[in-house]
Figure: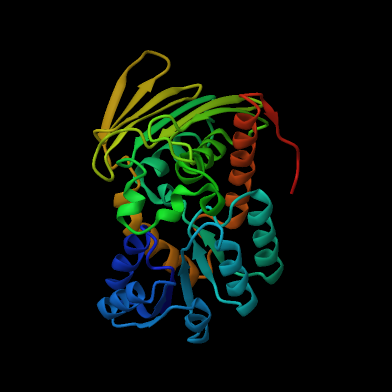
Length: 334
């Protein structure tokens, strides 16, 4: 399969193109980035053609594209791929808000195009284990804490300074990290959040984006808290994290030492197993599965419907914070 990569200066792009280059059924034919020197360096590494303009990459007609970029530019990139009928996976959040993402979703749906997004937690053993356990026993309460990422200054270090400008990125840890856990809550609780309450702060780094976010989601039969931030002074991919989920039968705890505890509700008996809790180790699996699903005519790991539903909640979280923590009631906007 001939594969292309748009926006290879994005800090997630190497986590995609490096494992893709190792797949025997994949040939990376072209890469692009507005910073041509970055594109040329990556192109040389991958033995692929390099362009500054992604429109030139599209003219190469890859079979499949992984797309990255500034969040403000993602709707335009996705629109170009849809216009040309090229199947793709685009990194979340694919835009700055629900309105932009839902418009892209509608266009891709109308064309019947394979269009996925980067909710890579979904391919992890942890996600699959919890999904199996909650298939007939939904989560009634969930708590996700995910603090770390070495501070937002790392975006400067990797040439992604735009992430620190909310006009270009849409925000900080809420739109970047919390999206994963909104997605998990929707799936594990079999529900759609109807009320969102949130408070955010930027008091650690004093930047325009939030470096701490606290959200409470309520659906008809479940409640979820999501706490994310850039405040843990640790190396990249080291987190202060803990996930706790309650069902009618079990209490599940995922710890940041890659241990998962499963407590039986009836008697408190606990079983443990070890698995990679964080998402970084699962990028190779996500890339391989994304390509394999497209090749087999199967839906993406996560599609733009999933992303639009999450972005609806993210929009409400920002609205709640702007209103001083007032609860936002979600309607049935499509």
